[in-house]
Amino acid sequence: MKISELKSSEKKILLFDIETAPNLGYIWGKYEQDVIAFKEHWYIISFAWKWLGEKNSYVKALNDFKGYKIGEANDKELVKLLWSLFNQADIIIAHNGNSFDIRKANARFLKHNLQPPSPYKSIDTLLIARRYFKMDSNKLDDLGDYFGIGRKLQTGGFQLWLGCIAGEKKSWTKMKSYNKHDVILLEKVYMRLRSWNTTHPDLNLIYNTTNNCPVCRSKKIVADKVIRTKTTKWQSYKCLECGAFHKDRIIKN
Image 1 (tube, rainbow, N blue to C red):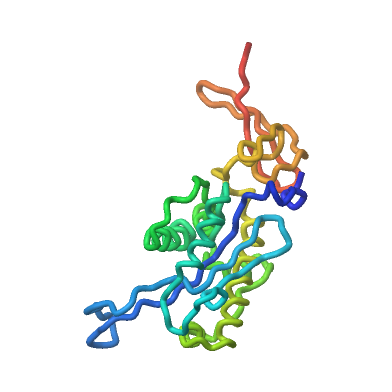
Image 2: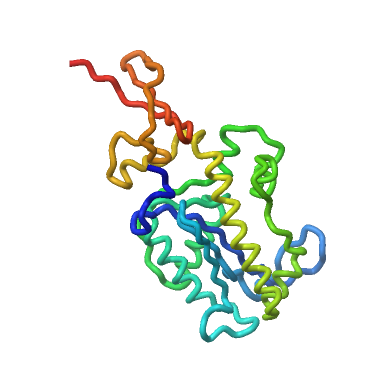
C-alpha cells in the first residue's frame, strides 16, 4: 500500500514549516553588535502544513484570525492551531525541524501555557542530507534544485516580513504562498531522501501492519542477502517501490 492510498483518518505524518517575525531590540551600531535590550521578542507569523500523501496543503497566518490587529505580536490562536496538529501527528517532518521549527514551536507552546502535545517521532530532512551525502549545500532550496524537483519561491527579501508586520495585504498573500510552497517542496525532498534514512520510524508499528516496507508501507518487498555479525544472522529485505532496506533477525530453532 502506498502512503497516498491511505484513508484520511490514517494519515498521521505531518509536514510543516513556520515563518517568524524578527526580534526588535536596541543596538549602538551596525556590525557584529550585541543587543542592549529587547523591545519585542519574535513570534510566529504564519505556518504551512500538509499530511503526507494528501493532495491538499494548507497555510494560516496571523491575519486569518478574528481580532487580528496590525503590528500586534499576538500569535496565540495561530499557535493553538499548530499545537492541535502536533497533537494529532505520529511523525513530524520538517527541514531543520529538530533545531529550528519544532523547537521554535515548542517555545510558543510554552509561552501560551500549552501542555506538551502527544508524543511523536521527528524526521529532519536537513539531518538526512548531512548524514548520508556530501552536497554543496543542504538548504531546502538547493536540494530541490539539485534533485531537479523544484525550488523555493522568491520573497524579495526582508521587505516581505516588514510588509506583513505593517499589515499589507499583498505581503500577507505573498508570504502565505511562499510558506505553502515550502511544504510542497519539503514533501518532494523527503520522498527523494527517505529510502536512505536507516533510522526512519517504522510505519508498521505506527499503522499496526506487518510484512510491509517500514518506510513506505508497500507490500512489494523481496529478500536480499543475509547479513552476519559475530553472534547473529539477519535477513535483509528490499522494497521494490521506495528502494529502502530493512532486516529481520534469523532465529534458529
